Image (cartoon, rainbow, N blue to C red):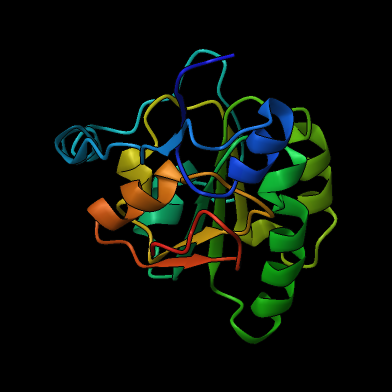
Amino acid sequence: AYDKVAVVSKEPIGNISEISGKSDNIHIVPNINNYMEILDNSQKDIEFDDDTIMMCSNPGGIRGVLESPAKKFITIGRFSEEKNHQMLLEAFDEFCDDYPDTQLIIIGGYGPLYFRTRRSAEKLNHSKNITIIRSVSNPMPILKECDLFILPSTREGWPMTVMEANTLDVPVMTSKIGGTDWI
């Protein structure tokens, strides 16, 4: 038994109460937005890690995508089921039927669904409009150049990526889930 339990949003309180048998020791402590670090990191050059893998059809790579006049949508999150990349890919492909110059950038680190996400993207009609990057330590220089941050998740606690997008003045669109009601 613990004297105090800290959670980042109200969503997990019910599950934690059920496990522990009490809720009077659960406290919400939102994540802290280190906006100065986010701003500083956004001013750095784009650098890839030794283990970065990128799927990108633009001959100029990610810089070519970012320098293009196209609208650029981005999501950042590990390659796992709750991040809902599959739904985003399908919706984006349909969106591109009407707006064929739009670009989608998916950045993720670890997660078991990277290769499945990539294969799904490669099968789409507008696959050339999709860039997928696995493993980049500092995505802020890429994020700041985008026109819209999309959070398609099926669940979140307190999404740091939304705070990062807000800090960089990138408009945000999220799925309707708990953990984003403060937006």
